[in-house]
Image (cartoon, rainbow over all chains, first blue to last red; front, top):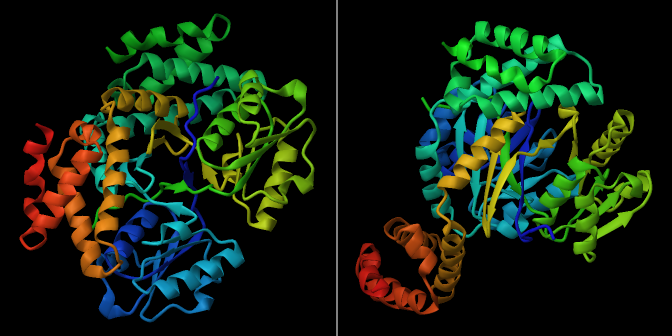
Amino acid sequence: MTSIQPGGSLIIAWQLKYKHVLVVGGGDVAAGRLQSVLATDATVSLIAPRDRLHPTVVALIKQFPQRVSYRDRAFKDADLDDASLVLTCIDDIDTSRRIVELCRARRVPVNAADIPNLCDFYFGSQIRQGPLQIMISTNGNGPKLANIIRRRIEATLPPHAGKAIENVGLLRAKLRQRAPGTGGELSKARMSWMSQVCESWSLDELALMDERIMERLLADGWELAADKKRVEASTTKPQLMA
Amino acid sequence: MTSIQPGGSLIIAWQLKYKHVLVVGGGDVAAGRLQSVLATDATVSLIAPRDRLHPTVVALIKQFPQRVSYRDRAFKDADLDDASLVLTCIDDIDTSRRIVELCRARRVPVNAADIPNLCDFYFGSQIRQGPLQIMISTNGNGPKLANIIRRRIEATLPPHAGKAIENVGLLRAKLRQRAPGTGGELSKARMSWMSQVCESWSLDELALMDERIMERLLADGWELAADKKRVEASTTKPQLMA
């Protein structure tokens, strides 16, 4: 029997490259949403009367003129036309419900702040360190506790974890250049070699890798080991780091 | 200037209650996907020839007969009809691409294993403890490192964090019963009181709360304090825990 606890959410990393997000509202909740969206590569339209804008929203509109289009007015149905994701953060529950209905009809995912039963998805408390993203969700039970747990995780997370991940991504790209192709066996050999490097090097060591170390690791570890067992790949570490 | 790092994903907790998920494929990747989906409240159709099923997939089909419909055959377009989310985990890249195109036309979110540029969303490494869910994403740079970081976080996470969150959810529901309504001021007072409880009680203490303690905390902390400043609410803790 596999141990599975039903009742949770499907936590996923939504891709927003080349996509457009609509944010309706400009208060403190909108400020948080805008920050989350700007942490991706999406462009954003933000619709809200100017006198309702939170100072952070004003600052972000100024800071990202290429990515944020601001409209000083109330929501219009046509705002949905180019949106692939919609976030409402307004006090007017009726308008919010109407926007959700319009989104359903167009099959556009939507989050309506404060109306959890109408949301296709929820947000959580987040940590970001370069390519590393960690999300803590309490499934609506306690946003405050999510923040407390986030701070605890942040305090124990190695400060160079993001850099380590960046370097592993680079090493993997270099490995794919040396051993290209998408064959089943080759794919598995690459994955297994990368796994060994990740398991036998510490996060701090991975974070310290530079181009020279990567090239030598690939030459001595991957290519010389190609005839032998790849298990030996990681043994080249001590002399590389010395 | 707000410090924002673009280039990330929007990590979200997707809601799947009353929804249906289509999984195409039955190998080891499908086994992981099936576990993630069964950890929500969704129902699932899994489409794959029986001789390709991973033992975990076979076990899960048996364990969740009410939630998993299994079809011993290849994918057909009609399989998409009732799906609100699609996950392909097959070696046949052409079929996978075709499924993604069909999903795009129907605006159904899709993840195609091993074809990252076609995915609407990615998965990451996950921790689950009752209502608590933590997701670690490296944005495709190093799935192995995501696992290593997950294990580190798991090792430092208080074992009762999930129970603490469950109790805070209960306390919040009880508070809403005592002080119902959705007014702006009342909402804020409730949120601020809950925050104080979460900040001044440790996770272990929150995990130990039972019905009696919750009722006394609400009576002494919330109601008696209603005329005074609610800041005193949390001072009732020492005698409650004694």
